[in-house]
Image (cartoon, rainbow over the protein chains, first blue to last red):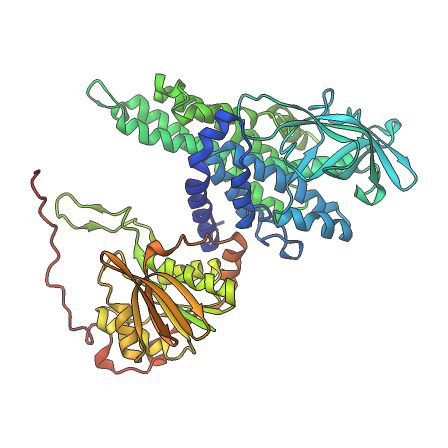
Amino acid sequence: MDFKLSQKHMMAQTLFREFTEREVGPIACEIDETESFPTQTVEKLKKYGFLGIPVPKEYGGQGCDTLTYVMCVEQLGKLCGTTSVIVSAHTSLACDPILKFGSPEQKQKYLVPLANGTHLGAFALTEAGAGTDSAGQQTKATRDGDDYILNGTKIFITNGKEADTYIVFAMTDKTQGTRGISAFIVEKGTPGFTFGTKEKKMGIRGSSTYELIFRDCRIPKENLLGQEGKGFGIAMQTLDGGRIGIAAQALGIAEGAFEKTVAYVQERKQFGKPISYFQNTQFLLADLATRIEAAKLLVYKAAMAKDTQKRFSTEAAMAKLYASETALEVTNKCIQLHGGYGYMRDYEVERMMRDAKITEIYEGTSEVQRMVISGSILK
Amino acid sequence: MNIAVCIKQVPDTTEVKLDPKTGTLIREGIPSIMNPDDKAALEAALTIKDKLGAEVHVITMGPMQADAVLREALAMGADKAYLLTDRAFGGADTLATSTTLAAALSKIDFDLILAGRQAIDGDTAQVGPQIAEHLGIPNVSCAEDIEVNGKEITIKRWYEDRFHTVKVKMPCLITVLGEMNTPRYMTPGGIFDAYDTEVTDWKREDVTVDDTKIGLKGSPICVAASLPKSLKAAG
């Protein structure tokens, strides 16, 4: 067992860190404050191949492994939760299901432009009444000749209005329950597909989170992803991968807040000395560093499991559960160590705590992760 | 067109701290990077490759760990990499270094050699021009812009308070200022490819050069002592 990163992984880590420090960090506060999607950053992510890291080269990707992709999401997350989730949702939730379940034609038509960054992807499962209970889909897809007709509304969709290609889930046969759900590839601009409300969020405020509305939206049958009725399985397997991405985002947020705090406690003086001289600070930093390290090992292990194992649901759930709860704990304590300044928006730990919270909720709440993990124990 | 780019692995001096007791650099734990001016030279080569098509060869002399800067260059888009590494090359000053590099470069069928103006650890700015002398080709230093027109290159060359526009015929050697460009990032796929690419290792026996001209023996310069500068008083 070897816990050391290979030379190429270390080089990739350096690349992602430098890119984040130069291109992402400087505008992180601004995009949060103005709730604006970082279009220029996404152009750069495209230019340097960050939008298709684990996708094979034959489909326009970089041909790297999941660990490399995860390190990218992690490093971006250190300074900007928004940019991190743009890459994670695009790669894990849009590229990955087409790679895994798409036909050769679908891969050429949709995966290639996603993986080379020409198009951005999104994943639409959640509905007003179907959150954790994602089987309760109300969106319907009715077969009509060579098409399906989509009707329904999806909410809280990451990359919502900015994406070009959407993976959309809908009921093709309500009598079949989860076995009546199917997955579709939907292009932006398809007649009958419009956008609703832009969500006002607590964190990841630069992320484009929208309601998607389908009204008699005609989708050619060629855009059915996988088989009819297999959509629920596609959604669950896709989310297994997505959870590793969100776990990496959470890990990055925790690391980013921690690094800022380590610098701060050595500068901030109270009672005539830097607050890093106090045992309270020292012990707290020790605890946080240990938690972060444990989270990192779980996240990297889950990433490797995705590449080597057929099923990795438990590893992904453990990584997401632990990393997201670590992110909230670490950012909370980092604000505490910053004192009143940490509560101010001038100090980035405030934003990081707001960004951290969502990692406990999206792509399966912590409660869902506990269900997945306990289910694997008590089967 | 074949472009050879000379690069050097250096300690990241922005991260180097001084030992307060001895006044010497603390090198332990300091990351090694590609020398910034050399990276600009590589970017210049890759820009020419993008525009006109070229094969970009990168070469470095150093310990085995210097392999990392060659991989980085490959991940940025270079095509071939050569590592000159042998204990016999160790302890070289600028003259012995340039002699060894020139001998190695003569094995590559180059039209143009690009190098950084100077390295941030030695700051001599001698190796590039010396290589040109050994190879008997023209050298233009301190380029801030390069334009290739057929067999001729037009160079905007920084010269104290002004620029010179210089035209030179290939083959030639140009040293490049870090200010010339912003080097591109590597790509993740480029990194994976770089580690699948073979770096050619050249040992002592692979270069045709006299024993007395390489390594410590071939180095007329001897640094007798290295002392910290005394701080100037305020005002």
